[in-house]
Length: 149
Image 1 (cartoon, rainbow, N blue to C red):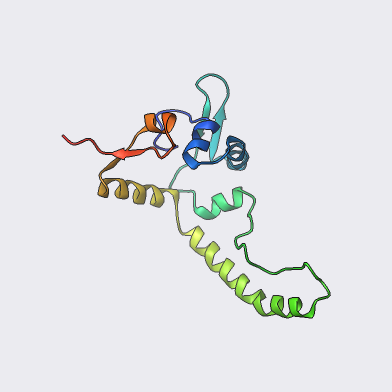
Image 2: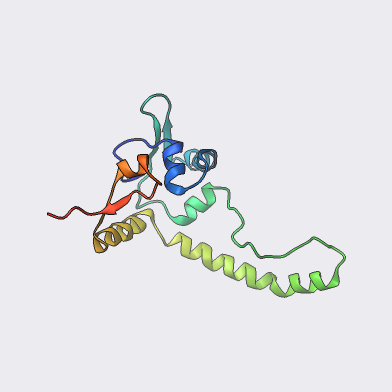
């Protein structure tokens, strides 16, 4: 979105991220509530970024999205009376808490500005450019080899 010449629709973003536009709208709603993006309705409307990349971290985004579960694997409570389940949960509690705390700390140290710099460096290194026509017309990859001069 930061590279787009104007607002991007949920359909455009869904195509780029290879997901349903409804999923995009749900995600963007959380970001909009935190002032990170804004939406414009009507012809020519769509989503735009409304935050300073230097001020927003991955942790901010994670929290704006409702702090979803970090780990697919975690404590289970499918059989509350099961002593094996209880023993496994007890053994893993601290490990999952430590891992999540470390991940949140790392998320807090990564700004959108840093991600943007890394993205641009990678594009230059690979000799690629962003091709918005490809995003709108093709499979959504949106990166094309840079034109040689």
